[in-house]
Structure formats: C-alpha cells, structure tokens
Amino acid sequence: MGITQINIEQSKPAENKLWGGRFTGGLDPLMEAYNESLSHDKAFYAQDIAGSIAWARANKNVGILTEEEFEKIETGFEQVKKEWETDTFNIKPGVDEDIHTANERRLGEVIGTDIAGKLHTGRSRNDQVATDLRLWVRDKLHEIRESVENLLRAIISRADDEIDIILPGYTHLQRAQPVRWSHWLLSYGFFFAADYKRLNTVIDDLNMCPLGSGALSGNVFGVDREAIGRELGFDGLCWNSMNAVSDRDFLLETMSWGSRIMGHVSRIATDLCIYSSQESSFVKLSDAYSTGSSLMPQKKNPDALELLRGKSGQMHGLLFGFTSSMNSLPSCYNKDMQEGTASIIATTRVLSDSIQILTGVLSTLTVSPANMSKALEPSMLATELADYLVKKGVPFRETHHISGRVVALAEKEGKGMDELDVEALRGVDKRFGDDVTECFDHEAAVEKRTAKGGTAKESVREQIRVLKALLKTGQMPAWSVA
Image 1 (cartoon, rainbow, N blue to C red):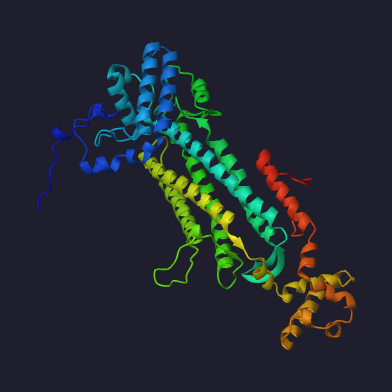
Image 2 (spheres, rainbow, N blue to C red):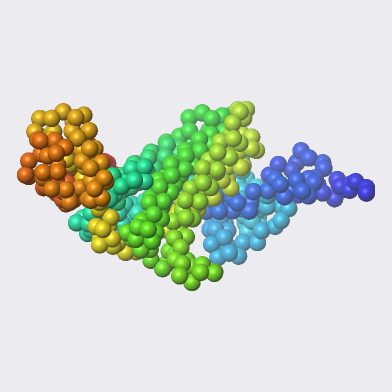
C-alpha cells in the first residue's frame, strides 16, 4: 500500500486565510479539519462582530480608516450578523477556519476587500479571540446568574409556604434529629447563595478588555484601548499585552465555579432521589421530570435527578481537561488554548440546562407531610433527654451516656422511647422528673432550636429573609435581618 502524496501547489492556503502569505504549500486535509474551530467558535459571531466594529472605530479615530470606510464596515457587519441570526450565512469549508476568518471574508464580499482588508490593521487573532471569549462568557454567565436567581426564588418560595412540615434530618444516611422541611431546603439555598456570590466575582474578574494587545507586544498605531473597552462594556483593561493574549484563567475560573455549583446540584439530587424512593416517599416528582421502565410498567424513575448527578461528573472532567491543556505552556498565545473553546461552550450549556432542570424539579414536586411525620422515630429525641438533664446541672458528657442507656433500654424492651414510663426512666437515672415526657415531642424539639441558623420556625424565617435580601441587594447580610 503506497503513501498518498499531497499536491502542494493544488493545496496552497486560500487567499482568505489570515496567515497564508508566508506559506507556499498547503495543509494536509486532515490537518485542515484538525485545525479548524469554526464548528465551535461560530457561537461567538455576535461578539466577534461587536469587537470588530469597536476595532474599526478605533482605527478610524487614528486615521487608518476614513469615516466613510468605517460606516461601510459597520453597515456591512450588520448584514453579516443578520445572516448568522437567520441561519443564512454560507460557511465555506477549507476557507473559514474560524469565526474571525469567516466574518472578515464575508465582509469583504459585502463591501469589497479593498475596505474590509483594512479592518485587521494592528489587530491579531490572539487579542481578537481573547476578546470574543470574554464577551461571550460574560453574556452566558449573566444568563446563568439569572437562572441561579430563579433557583433561589423557587427554594425560598417552598420554604416560605411549607414551613410547618417536619421530617427526619440525616447524618451518615441515618435518621438523626427532626428538622423543618424548609430548613432542609434552605440548607441547599445557602449553598447556592454562596455560588451566586462567587459567580458575581467570576464575572467581575473576567470583564477586562484585551483588545489592542496585538499578537503579544501591543499596538503601534496608538489606538485608544480605554475607548474600545468602554464601547464593549468592559470594566477595565488587561494591563499587559503578553498576559492579555495568553490569559485563560477566566475560563478556568468559570469551569471551576461550574464544578462547584454542580457538586451542590449533585448533592441535592441525591437527597431527592432518596426522598422520592418508595422506601421514603417523602416527595413525588412531577411526570415532567421522570421516566418509566421499558420492562416494568410500575416504575417511575427520577431520571432528571440522576442525570444532574451524571452531568456534575462531566463538569469536573471539563475543568480537569482544560487545566491539563493549559499546564506548562510557554508565554503568550499557543494553539493548545483553542481547546478551551469547546470546553467553555460545553460548560455553559451543561450549567444552564442543569440549573433550569433543578429549578423545575423543585418547583413541581409534591411533598407528603404524612410520610415525613411517620418517619419521625422516638429515638431521634435522644438528645432531648440529654439536654433535659443538662438543664438540671448534669454535665453533658454524663447526660449523653444516660440518654444512650435509655435508648438501649427501649431497644431491649422492644418499645419506643416515648413508650417507657417515668419509673422506667428513673430506673436509669433518678433525676428524671415527671415532666420528662415533654421531651418526646418532635415539634417541641424543633422549636427549641431558636439560635440563629437553627430549625425553629423564627430562625428559618430569618434565613428566608437573608436569602431574599441577597437577591434584592446582591449582598449577604452579616448579622440580624428584621
């Protein structure tokens, strides 16, 4: 079997390539496909056009373009953008290797290459792609932030409406102490509130303008980078041109943030899988977020929750993959960084879909207060017995042991702790009084947890006010909230 030879003359780089002039030979067709990124970065068409218009304006302001030439570029890009929006943009395989090449090539067809050919003056794809990425990720994170806000609203709404429901709280998957259903909801609400605050920091950190940095050393024509940044909605400049074109930390920070919130999503998904199982039956998922079995007609599977857990693993993998790609790179731009494009697109898609799915699950599930109440065992009140004796001056370490003996006695006699009479309790410790039976009340036990952050009703209501304040002001109150 012979080796296939590539006809160099027939495969010269197309004239539309932004880098073709130095090359006399062309790319291996496999390399052509391996190198292209348009299949991914076409998602940035609007950001690329916005950056190009800002760049054209800056070049007009320093005399590279005339006012008429700038207006033609701006008008031409309006047509190009409309073609993308209406799905009529004609991609030319082998020519349009990325969104930058595609947009400039089409602009040249619309207004003529004599003017379009001036657009790239002083600009490199290195600062161009860095700008596109920051603009696109910023836009996506604004959308995701709104989804997180909606998730928090769903949690707050249920917590407010269903504050009277009590269920077992678990540690180590073992029934531990009674808590309010609202308290459980808000435990995840505060995870997502922390994620919300961190997301704002991620957005602030990435919103710096790299455009005007060139390939690595800056711009020779004296463009006003601050004016460019303001036009594009940035908060400031990337201050070092070499750093500006090589920085992808904002992608890694976005992926890291995504990995963290999806970790929280996976945890609440697991809880809800358990709560919706027939063994618990605390909640029932809406049909909109469940599927059946192809064999067993009786099955109603929590597929939405299981997929949320699975997607969290994908998120961790995306972060690890791109972290590995960026590791040990030399300074300035390297093509390894292109791997971040597909990774960040996948990241934002998974995040957006997952947060909306979880919001839907929480908004539509049905709660069974009766089944939650049935699961409240007397042994979950063992700590109440210990606390009872503490209030009589007995050291907690001693009361813990005494309460444990009561649990053992109840198990030995095959009774619930609440079924032991006062004399039986006094047989364990004579300091138990007639009022000890008041300890065996799950509602009362819950209402004793009045310290801030506890599961008593007023404490839970304050937690709701804290989360509402966060959504209203963007800040988490540090202390009391009236």
